[in-house]
Image (cartoon, rainbow, N blue to C red; front, side, top):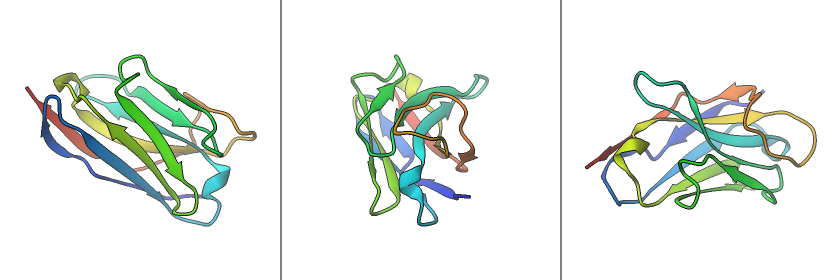
Length: 124
């Protein structure tokens, strides 16, 4: 089992950048596929980005492609989400998630563990 704690959210202006971090407990972080999701008020949870165990593969949702970058540091048990050129429509609670699947692959669904979320608000 793994516990996930997100940090780095806040209030920024459109066009600004922000980096989210997600710290994982335990010594098996490198075995997990990691992902970021977000949920805006009144909307369904949306896939944002995923990264494979070795960080060799990444994949992004269409709405953030080219602006957001997911990365991970297995030695530090941390996954990051660098968000650039932020837009008001990026406003949401951002969640980190982990999947204990097999293989060095990416995943957009089927996550087993979730963090508590961190609020990102982008003003226009």
